[in-house]
Amino acid sequence: MIATLILLVSIPLAVITLFAAENTRTSVETEVIDSNLSKIKWTGGYLEERFDQINNIVYTLLINESYNDYLKKMEDSNPSIAFNAQKGLMNTITSIFYSNVNYLSDIQMYLNEPNKYILVSGSNIEVTSPQHIPDPFESFLSTKDDFMISNGSSGQSFFLLRSINRFEDRARLGGISLEINWDKMDSTLNLLSPGNEQAVFIANEKGDILYQLGGGPSLKTSIGDFHQPIDSGSGYYHTKDHYIFYSTIQPWNLKLFKVIPNSFINDSAKRTWSYGIVVGIISIAISILIAVIVAWKTANPIVKLARSMQGFMPPKEDETLVITHKDEIGLLETRYYNMSTRLKEYIKTEYSMNLEKRTAQLKALQAQVNPHFLQNTLQLIGSFHRYFLS
View 1 (cartoon, rainbow, N blue to C red):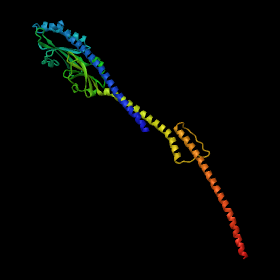
View 2: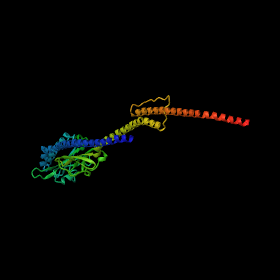
View 3: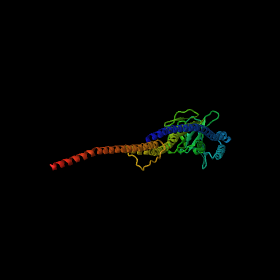
View 4: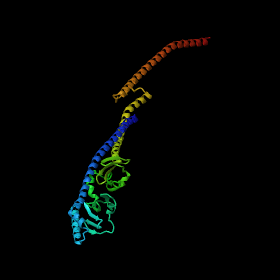
Protein backbone atom coordinates (compact mmCIF):
# COMPACT_ATOMS: atom_id res chain seq x y z
CA MET A 1 0.00 0.00 0.00
CA ILE A 2 2.87 2.35 0.83
CA ALA A 3 4.50 1.63 -2.52
CA THR A 4 1.19 2.27 -4.27
CA LEU A 5 0.77 5.61 -2.52
CA ILE A 6 4.34 6.61 -3.45
CA LEU A 7 3.72 5.76 -7.10
CA LEU A 8 0.39 7.58 -7.09
CA VAL A 9 2.12 10.71 -5.77
CA SER A 10 5.52 10.60 -7.50
CA ILE A 11 4.51 9.69 -11.07
CA PRO A 12 1.93 12.47 -11.59
CA LEU A 13 4.18 14.94 -9.78
CA ALA A 14 7.15 14.03 -11.99
CA VAL A 15 5.06 14.39 -15.14
CA ILE A 16 3.63 17.74 -14.00
CA THR A 17 7.09 19.00 -13.02
CA LEU A 18 8.51 17.93 -16.40
CA PHE A 19 5.76 19.76 -18.28
CA ALA A 20 6.13 22.80 -16.00
CA ALA A 21 9.91 22.89 -16.55
CA GLU A 22 9.54 22.65 -20.33
CA ASN A 23 6.76 25.25 -20.32
CA THR A 24 8.95 27.56 -18.23
CA ARG A 25 11.89 27.07 -20.58
CA THR A 26 9.72 27.78 -23.63
CA SER A 27 8.21 30.88 -22.02
CA VAL A 28 11.63 32.21 -20.97
CA GLU A 29 13.04 31.47 -24.44
CA THR A 30 10.20 33.36 -26.13
CA GLU A 31 10.56 36.30 -23.76
CA VAL A 32 14.36 36.42 -24.17
CA ILE A 33 14.14 36.27 -27.97
CA ASP A 34 11.43 38.94 -28.27
CA SER A 35 13.13 41.24 -25.76
CA ASN A 36 16.60 40.95 -27.27
CA LEU A 37 15.39 41.31 -30.86
CA SER A 38 13.87 44.64 -29.88
CA LYS A 39 16.95 45.70 -27.88
CA ILE A 40 19.46 44.73 -30.57
CA LYS A 41 17.51 46.67 -33.19
CA TRP A 42 17.29 49.85 -31.12
CA THR A 43 20.88 49.59 -29.90
CA GLY A 44 22.12 49.19 -33.48
CA GLY A 45 20.21 52.35 -34.38
CA TYR A 46 21.74 54.26 -31.48
CA LEU A 47 25.23 53.10 -32.45
CA GLU A 48 24.64 54.34 -36.00
CA GLU A 49 23.78 57.74 -34.53
CA ARG A 50 26.91 57.71 -32.37
CA PHE A 51 29.13 56.89 -35.35
CA ASP A 52 27.35 59.55 -37.39
CA GLN A 53 28.10 62.09 -34.65
CA ILE A 54 31.76 61.10 -34.75
CA ASN A 55 31.78 61.22 -38.55
CA ASN A 56 30.33 64.74 -38.41
CA ILE A 57 33.53 65.81 -36.67
CA VAL A 58 35.42 64.85 -39.82
CA TYR A 59 32.95 66.73 -42.00
CA THR A 60 33.30 69.76 -39.74
CA LEU A 61 36.99 69.74 -40.53
CA LEU A 62 36.63 69.01 -44.24
CA ILE A 63 34.24 71.89 -44.87
CA ASN A 64 36.24 74.31 -42.77
CA GLU A 65 37.69 77.25 -44.68
CA SER A 66 41.15 76.86 -43.12
CA TYR A 67 41.35 73.26 -44.34
CA ASN A 68 40.51 74.22 -47.91
CA ASP A 69 42.88 77.18 -47.67
CA TYR A 70 45.70 74.88 -46.56
CA LEU A 71 45.10 72.48 -49.46
CA LYS A 72 45.41 75.39 -51.86
CA LYS A 73 48.47 76.98 -50.27
CA MET A 74 50.43 74.02 -48.85
CA GLU A 75 52.61 73.92 -51.98
CA ASP A 76 52.93 77.67 -52.33
CA SER A 77 56.44 78.80 -53.14
CA ASN A 78 56.22 81.50 -50.47
CA PRO A 79 57.03 79.77 -47.15
CA SER A 80 55.21 82.45 -45.18
CA ILE A 81 51.94 81.81 -46.99
CA ALA A 82 52.26 78.03 -46.54
CA PHE A 83 53.14 78.44 -42.85
CA ASN A 84 50.16 80.71 -42.15
CA ALA A 85 47.83 78.27 -43.93
CA GLN A 86 49.28 75.42 -41.86
CA LYS A 87 48.93 77.43 -38.66
CA GLY A 88 45.30 78.16 -39.45
CA LEU A 89 44.63 74.46 -40.05
CA MET A 90 46.35 73.50 -36.78
CA ASN A 91 44.23 76.00 -34.86
CA THR A 92 41.09 74.56 -36.47
CA ILE A 93 42.04 70.96 -35.67
CA THR A 94 42.95 71.91 -32.08
CA SER A 95 39.64 73.72 -31.64
CA ILE A 96 37.68 70.76 -33.00
CA PHE A 97 39.61 68.36 -30.76
CA TYR A 98 38.92 70.26 -27.54
CA SER A 99 35.30 70.76 -28.55
CA ASN A 100 34.90 66.96 -28.71
CA VAL A 101 37.44 65.89 -26.12
CA ASN A 102 34.78 63.73 -24.41
CA TYR A 103 34.82 61.51 -27.49
CA LEU A 104 38.29 61.86 -28.96
CA SER A 105 41.67 60.59 -27.88
CA ASP A 106 43.38 62.31 -30.81
CA ILE A 107 42.97 63.67 -34.34
CA GLN A 108 45.49 62.71 -37.01
CA MET A 109 45.88 63.90 -40.59
CA TYR A 110 48.25 62.65 -43.24
CA LEU A 111 48.78 64.22 -46.67
CA ASN A 112 50.76 62.44 -49.37
CA GLU A 113 51.85 65.72 -50.84
CA PRO A 114 53.77 67.41 -49.32
CA ASN A 115 54.21 64.41 -46.95
CA LYS A 116 52.78 66.07 -43.85
CA TYR A 117 51.60 64.29 -40.70
CA ILE A 118 49.59 66.30 -38.16
CA LEU A 119 48.75 65.02 -34.68
CA VAL A 120 46.61 66.76 -32.08
CA SER A 121 45.97 65.02 -28.74
CA GLY A 122 45.48 66.02 -25.15
CA SER A 123 49.21 65.89 -24.47
CA ASN A 124 50.79 66.55 -27.84
CA ILE A 125 50.47 68.74 -30.95
CA GLU A 126 52.94 68.14 -33.74
CA VAL A 127 53.50 68.48 -37.46
CA THR A 128 56.11 66.19 -39.02
CA SER A 129 57.29 64.89 -42.37
CA PRO A 130 57.52 61.11 -41.73
CA GLN A 131 59.85 58.85 -43.66
CA HIS A 132 57.03 56.36 -44.25
CA ILE A 133 53.26 56.39 -44.04
CA PRO A 134 52.32 56.28 -40.34
CA ASP A 135 49.79 53.95 -38.78
CA PRO A 136 46.87 53.73 -39.13
CA PHE A 137 47.00 55.34 -42.59
CA GLU A 138 49.27 52.77 -44.23
CA SER A 139 46.71 49.96 -44.37
CA PHE A 140 43.86 52.37 -45.08
CA LEU A 141 45.49 54.14 -48.03
CA SER A 142 46.32 50.80 -49.61
CA THR A 143 42.59 50.21 -50.10
CA LYS A 144 40.08 52.04 -52.24
CA ASP A 145 37.65 52.53 -49.36
CA ASP A 146 36.44 56.03 -48.53
CA PHE A 147 36.23 55.16 -44.85
CA MET A 148 37.36 52.46 -42.46
CA ILE A 149 37.03 51.53 -38.81
CA SER A 150 39.96 49.63 -37.35
CA ASN A 151 41.10 48.72 -33.87
CA GLY A 152 43.96 50.43 -32.10
CA SER A 153 47.00 48.45 -31.07
CA SER A 154 45.85 48.24 -27.43
CA GLY A 155 42.35 47.06 -28.36
CA GLN A 156 40.84 49.70 -26.08
CA SER A 157 40.28 52.24 -28.87
CA PHE A 158 39.40 52.36 -32.54
CA PHE A 159 40.20 54.62 -35.47
CA LEU A 160 37.58 56.12 -37.73
CA LEU A 161 39.45 56.95 -40.95
CA ARG A 162 38.23 58.96 -43.93
CA SER A 163 40.05 59.69 -47.14
CA ILE A 164 40.95 63.21 -48.26
CA ASN A 165 40.17 63.66 -51.95
CA ARG A 166 40.79 66.55 -54.32
CA PHE A 167 37.43 68.02 -55.21
CA GLU A 168 38.11 68.45 -58.93
CA ASP A 169 39.27 64.93 -59.88
CA ARG A 170 38.60 62.96 -56.63
CA ALA A 171 42.26 62.03 -56.46
CA ARG A 172 43.25 60.70 -53.02
CA LEU A 173 45.45 63.16 -51.17
CA GLY A 174 45.64 61.43 -47.81
CA GLY A 175 43.40 60.71 -44.85
CA ILE A 176 41.97 61.91 -41.53
CA SER A 177 41.81 59.67 -38.45
CA LEU A 178 39.85 60.10 -35.23
CA GLU A 179 40.85 57.86 -32.32
CA ILE A 180 38.01 57.08 -29.91
CA ASN A 181 38.07 54.90 -26.81
CA TRP A 182 35.62 52.00 -27.05
CA ASP A 183 34.35 52.65 -23.51
CA LYS A 184 32.69 55.78 -24.91
CA MET A 185 30.23 53.32 -26.47
CA ASP A 186 29.51 51.48 -23.23
CA SER A 187 26.56 53.68 -22.30
CA THR A 188 24.89 52.64 -25.55
CA LEU A 189 25.94 48.99 -25.41
CA ASN A 190 24.63 48.71 -21.85
CA LEU A 191 21.13 48.96 -23.32
CA LEU A 192 21.64 45.27 -24.18
CA SER A 193 22.22 44.43 -20.48
CA PRO A 194 25.38 42.34 -20.88
CA GLY A 195 26.70 40.55 -17.82
CA ASN A 196 28.95 37.69 -16.79
CA GLU A 197 26.81 35.18 -18.68
CA GLN A 198 26.12 37.31 -21.76
CA ALA A 199 28.40 39.23 -24.07
CA VAL A 200 28.07 42.06 -26.58
CA PHE A 201 30.45 42.19 -29.56
CA ILE A 202 31.16 44.74 -32.22
CA ALA A 203 32.73 42.99 -35.20
CA ASN A 204 33.81 44.04 -38.66
CA GLU A 205 32.46 42.54 -41.86
CA LYS A 206 35.08 39.76 -41.70
CA GLY A 207 33.82 38.64 -38.30
CA ASP A 208 36.86 39.87 -36.36
CA ILE A 209 36.00 41.18 -32.93
CA LEU A 210 36.72 44.87 -32.51
CA TYR A 211 35.25 45.26 -29.03
CA GLN A 212 33.62 43.07 -26.37
CA LEU A 213 31.53 44.12 -23.40
CA GLY A 214 30.59 41.63 -20.71
CA GLY A 215 30.76 37.87 -21.00
CA GLY A 216 33.78 37.21 -18.80
CA PRO A 217 36.59 34.80 -19.73
CA SER A 218 34.22 32.05 -20.91
CA LEU A 219 33.09 34.10 -23.92
CA LYS A 220 36.40 35.71 -24.90
CA THR A 221 36.58 33.98 -28.24
CA SER A 222 36.46 34.85 -31.91
CA ILE A 223 33.05 35.71 -33.24
CA GLY A 224 34.00 33.39 -36.10
CA ASP A 225 33.42 30.40 -33.79
CA PHE A 226 29.69 31.00 -34.09
CA HIS A 227 29.52 33.48 -36.94
CA GLN A 228 27.20 32.67 -39.84
CA PRO A 229 26.47 34.51 -43.05
CA ILE A 230 23.73 36.98 -42.14
CA ASP A 231 21.72 39.54 -44.00
CA SER A 232 21.64 43.22 -43.26
CA GLY A 233 19.20 44.45 -40.66
CA SER A 234 18.63 42.64 -37.38
CA GLY A 235 17.66 39.15 -36.32
CA TYR A 236 18.92 36.08 -34.48
CA TYR A 237 19.99 32.49 -34.98
CA HIS A 238 20.51 29.58 -32.64
CA THR A 239 23.66 27.44 -32.50
CA LYS A 240 24.34 24.37 -30.41
CA ASP A 241 25.48 26.37 -27.39
CA HIS A 242 24.35 29.98 -27.97
CA TYR A 243 21.59 32.31 -29.04
CA ILE A 244 23.13 34.92 -31.35
CA PHE A 245 21.34 38.24 -31.86
CA TYR A 246 22.71 40.65 -34.45
CA SER A 247 22.18 44.05 -35.99
CA THR A 248 23.97 45.70 -38.90
CA ILE A 249 25.44 49.16 -38.34
CA GLN A 250 25.16 50.91 -41.65
CA PRO A 251 27.02 52.27 -43.54
CA TRP A 252 30.03 51.36 -41.42
CA ASN A 253 30.12 47.65 -42.32
CA LEU A 254 29.96 46.75 -38.63
CA LYS A 255 27.95 44.05 -36.94
CA LEU A 256 26.59 44.26 -33.43
CA PHE A 257 26.22 40.87 -31.74
CA LYS A 258 24.75 39.80 -28.46
CA VAL A 259 25.59 36.25 -27.36
CA ILE A 260 23.45 34.44 -24.80
CA PRO A 261 24.46 30.90 -23.79
CA ASN A 262 21.81 28.19 -23.71
CA SER A 263 22.41 27.74 -20.01
CA PHE A 264 20.94 31.21 -19.36
CA ILE A 265 17.56 29.93 -20.60
CA ASN A 266 17.90 26.32 -19.49
CA ASP A 267 18.72 27.34 -15.91
CA SER A 268 15.14 28.54 -15.45
CA ALA A 269 13.87 25.07 -16.40
CA LYS A 270 16.48 23.47 -14.15
CA ARG A 271 15.30 25.63 -11.25
CA THR A 272 11.70 24.58 -11.89
CA TRP A 273 12.81 20.95 -12.09
CA SER A 274 14.82 21.32 -8.86
CA TYR A 275 11.84 22.85 -7.08
CA GLY A 276 9.69 20.01 -8.40
CA ILE A 277 12.15 17.42 -7.08
CA VAL A 278 12.21 19.10 -3.67
CA VAL A 279 8.41 19.27 -3.57
CA GLY A 280 8.26 15.67 -4.79
CA ILE A 281 10.61 14.42 -2.07
CA ILE A 282 8.64 16.28 0.60
CA SER A 283 5.35 14.96 -0.81
CA ILE A 284 6.69 11.38 -0.92
CA ALA A 285 7.99 11.69 2.64
CA ILE A 286 4.61 12.99 3.83
CA SER A 287 2.86 10.25 1.85
CA ILE A 288 5.05 7.59 3.45
CA LEU A 289 4.37 9.02 6.91
CA ILE A 290 0.63 9.15 6.27
CA ALA A 291 0.71 5.64 4.78
CA VAL A 292 2.55 4.27 7.81
CA ILE A 293 0.10 5.93 10.22
CA VAL A 294 -2.93 4.75 8.24
CA ALA A 295 -1.47 1.26 7.83
CA TRP A 296 -0.69 1.03 11.53
CA LYS A 297 -4.13 2.20 12.57
CA THR A 298 -5.78 -0.04 10.01
CA ALA A 299 -3.65 -3.15 10.32
CA ASN A 300 -3.14 -3.22 14.08
CA PRO A 301 -6.81 -4.08 14.93
CA ILE A 302 -6.86 -6.62 12.11
CA VAL A 303 -3.67 -8.24 13.40
CA LYS A 304 -5.10 -8.38 16.92
CA LEU A 305 -8.33 -9.88 15.61
CA ALA A 306 -6.39 -12.40 13.50
CA ARG A 307 -4.27 -13.43 16.49
CA SER A 308 -7.40 -13.79 18.60
CA MET A 309 -8.97 -16.02 15.97
CA GLN A 310 -5.73 -17.98 15.51
CA GLY A 311 -5.46 -18.84 19.17
CA PHE A 312 -9.18 -18.86 19.85
CA MET A 313 -10.07 -18.60 23.56
CA PRO A 314 -13.59 -17.87 24.76
CA PRO A 315 -13.83 -14.67 26.76
CA LYS A 316 -13.57 -14.92 30.52
CA GLU A 317 -16.54 -14.33 32.79
CA ASP A 318 -15.34 -10.93 33.96
CA GLU A 319 -13.92 -9.86 30.57
CA THR A 320 -15.68 -6.93 28.88
CA LEU A 321 -15.05 -5.93 25.27
CA VAL A 322 -13.95 -2.31 24.70
CA ILE A 323 -14.67 -1.20 21.11
CA THR A 324 -12.42 1.66 19.97
CA HIS A 325 -13.31 1.59 16.27
CA LYS A 326 -16.57 2.73 14.70
CA ASP A 327 -15.75 1.31 11.28
CA GLU A 328 -15.83 -2.19 9.77
CA ILE A 329 -13.00 -3.29 12.07
CA GLY A 330 -15.10 -2.36 15.11
CA LEU A 331 -18.05 -4.26 13.62
CA LEU A 332 -15.87 -7.34 13.15
CA GLU A 333 -14.62 -7.08 16.73
CA THR A 334 -18.17 -6.78 18.06
CA ARG A 335 -19.40 -9.70 15.96
CA TYR A 336 -16.40 -11.78 16.94
CA TYR A 337 -16.97 -11.02 20.65
CA ASN A 338 -20.65 -11.87 20.38
CA MET A 339 -19.82 -15.09 18.53
CA SER A 340 -17.28 -16.02 21.20
CA THR A 341 -19.77 -15.30 23.96
CA ARG A 342 -22.49 -17.38 22.32
CA LEU A 343 -20.03 -20.16 21.64
CA LYS A 344 -18.98 -20.12 25.27
CA GLU A 345 -22.59 -20.30 26.39
CA TYR A 346 -23.25 -23.10 23.93
CA ILE A 347 -20.23 -25.05 25.17
CA LYS A 348 -21.29 -24.48 28.75
CA THR A 349 -24.84 -25.63 28.04
CA GLU A 350 -23.66 -28.64 26.05
CA TYR A 351 -21.23 -29.54 28.81
CA SER A 352 -23.90 -29.27 31.48
CA MET A 353 -26.31 -31.39 29.46
CA ASN A 354 -23.69 -34.08 28.90
CA LEU A 355 -22.76 -34.03 32.57
CA GLU A 356 -26.37 -34.43 33.68
CA LYS A 357 -26.87 -37.19 31.13
CA ARG A 358 -23.84 -39.10 32.40
CA THR A 359 -24.94 -38.61 35.99
CA ALA A 360 -28.38 -40.00 35.20
CA GLN A 361 -26.86 -42.98 33.41
CA LEU A 362 -24.59 -43.67 36.37
CA LYS A 363 -27.49 -43.47 38.77
CA ALA A 364 -29.54 -45.82 36.61
CA LEU A 365 -26.65 -48.25 36.48
CA GLN A 366 -26.29 -48.09 40.20
CA ALA A 367 -29.98 -48.74 40.58
CA GLN A 368 -29.64 -51.83 38.40
CA VAL A 369 -26.52 -53.08 40.12
CA ASN A 370 -27.60 -52.72 43.79
CA PRO A 371 -30.46 -55.37 43.92
CA HIS A 372 -28.38 -58.01 42.20
CA PHE A 373 -25.47 -57.41 44.52
CA LEU A 374 -27.68 -57.85 47.62
CA GLN A 375 -29.26 -61.04 46.29
CA ASN A 376 -25.90 -62.55 45.41
CA THR A 377 -24.56 -61.66 48.82
CA LEU A 378 -27.51 -63.37 50.57
CA GLN A 379 -27.13 -66.44 48.39
CA LEU A 380 -23.41 -66.60 49.19
CA ILE A 381 -24.15 -66.37 52.93
CA GLY A 382 -26.78 -69.07 52.61
CA SER A 383 -24.35 -71.33 50.80
CA PHE A 384 -21.72 -70.92 53.49
CA HIS A 385 -24.32 -71.62 56.12
CA ARG A 386 -25.47 -74.90 54.59
CA TYR A 387 -21.89 -75.95 54.08
CA PHE A 388 -20.97 -75.55 57.66
CA LEU A 389 -24.16 -77.26 58.88
CA SER A 390 -23.53 -80.31 56.88
